Image 1 (tube, rainbow, N blue to C red):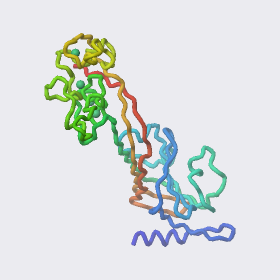
Image 2 (image 1 turned 30 degrees about the vertical axis):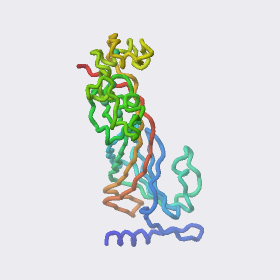
Image 3 (image 1 turned 90 degrees about the vertical axis):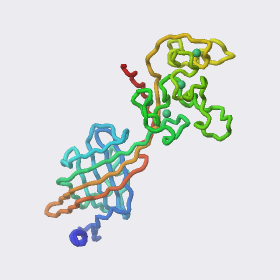
Image 4 (image 1 turned 120 degrees about the horizontal axis):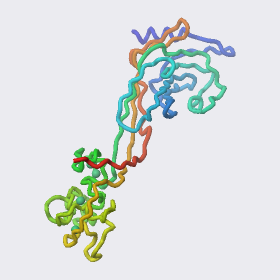
Length: 296
Ligand SMILES: [Ca+2]
Ligand SMILES: [Ca+2]
Ligand SMILES: [Ca+2]
Ligand SMILES: [Ca+2]
C-alpha cells in the first residue's frame, strides 16, 4: 500500500520539456550500482533503464575505502555526505557522474535532495597469498605471530623462506596436492613450511642466512644445498626481522540507504530501506607489508 501511494505521488509529479511530459518512476531495482571517485569524494550511483533518472550518493570520507572488510555508516548531512535523486531531459551516462567537469547536457529537470538518512557501506575483502595452499588448507592461525593469518601469509612459519618453496615442490607423489607429501627435511613430522628449523641442526632457519633476509641464498656446500637445509652446517647469525610480504586482495561492496527522506520543495519521497545493490571486485590489488617482529 505504501508503495502504491508512493507511485501515485511520483506519477503526479510531471514537468514539461519541449512539450514532452516526463513522469518520474523512482525505480532502480533492476539496474546495477556503479561507482567512481576516491578518498575525499566517493560517488555511488544508479541510472535507471531509460537513462533519464538517477539516484546518487556522495561520501566525503577521507578514508581509503575498499581495502579491508569494514562497515561504514554515514549520516546524510547534506554537505559532506548527500543523496540526490534527479530526472534529466535526456539519457545520462556514467560520464555525467565521473568526469571532473560534468557534461552540460542532459539538463536536470527535477531534483530531490536527501534531507536526512543513513548510508551503510559494507566492504567484504578476500585476501590470498598465492603460496600454493588454499584458504581451507591453511586456516587463519598465525603461528609466526607476524599478524598475518596463514591464508594471507606467504611465509607461514616466519623463517624468511616463502611457503611456496617449502611445500612438496617436486610433486613426487604426482597428486598435485602439496599437503599429502609435504617437505619435511629433518623428518620431525613438522612440514618445512611450518618448521622454523628445517634441517633440525638446532639453528633456526632464519639465523642460517648470514644476517640476510633470504636463507635460500646462503650455500656453503653446493652439493647439499642451502645451509638451512644442511644439518652439517650450523652457522648462526641472529636476525630477528621478517622479510617483506605481499598478498592479493579483492573487495566487494554492498550499499544500503535507510530512513531516507528526499525533498523537492513541498514534495517528499521517503524510503525506510533502499537497497542500492552490490559491486563485485570494486577494488583488487596487491599489498606489500613488512610485518613487525614479535617483541617476545
Ligand atoms: Ca603469520
Ligand atoms: Ca600462507
Ligand atoms: Ca621452514
Ligand atoms: Ca643447517
